[in-house]
Amino acid sequence: MSTSSSLSPIRGTINKFDPADEDLTKLLQANREWAKAVKEQDPEFFRQINLKQEPKILWIGCSDSRVPAEQILQLGPGELFVHRNIANVVINSDINSLAVIQYAVEVLKVQHIIVCGHYNCGGVAAASGNEQYGLIDSWLRNIKDVYRLHEEELEAISDSTDRFRRLVEFNAIHSAKNLCHTTTVQNAWARGQKLAVHAWAYDLSDGHARRLGFCAHDNKELDKIYKVTQ
Image (cartoon, rainbow, N blue to C red; front, side, top):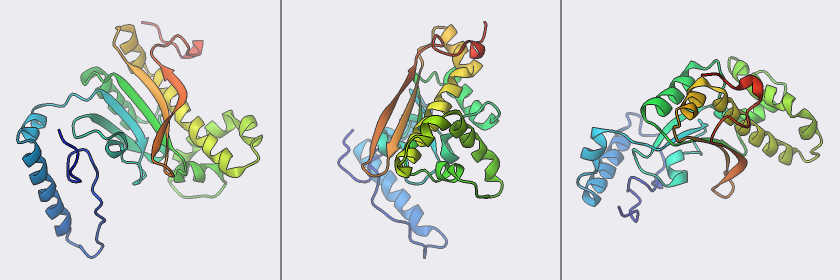
């Protein structure tokens, strides 16, 4: 499918939301224009994706509006299964993310799970300090725990920006490791299912997503205490 049109299912538009559009009429108009353009490029597109979804990638990212998975990876509708939350945190007590992971692995049979943090993340920044923000403080505690686990290395970084960026990376890697600790992922590996778990970070300053040196295809490198028996 051609990606030359700014209204294609892959490329993002350059439109900005108009705050004066109080009843969201312009948004719906833009939707109709996009749907029309897509059908002109591929008359069967919507009929085909209406039948089923077969994404090969689960993307777990931040809710930040500047980090849209499909546009970053230049993939169209039906190509990514997506879960987003504040600061791309994966923990064993969040039934929301665990349900998404189970469905992606056991039903959709995704082959890759990408946990993608991003530099200049507001959630990570908030967790780095001692201010109170309300209900979200309980969520940010998970990132504070990541800081504590890597405190020696982080405190040794004199530049505050570099320290912040490193915490973003540690947080993404920590969530990716937590993914590997789940019975859903380990059972998939035990069944011989092809599944890789990746930790990435996206840089808002240049638009580049980068590997963080963590990619697991099995549970061999997990700490012994986290390995589950079949």
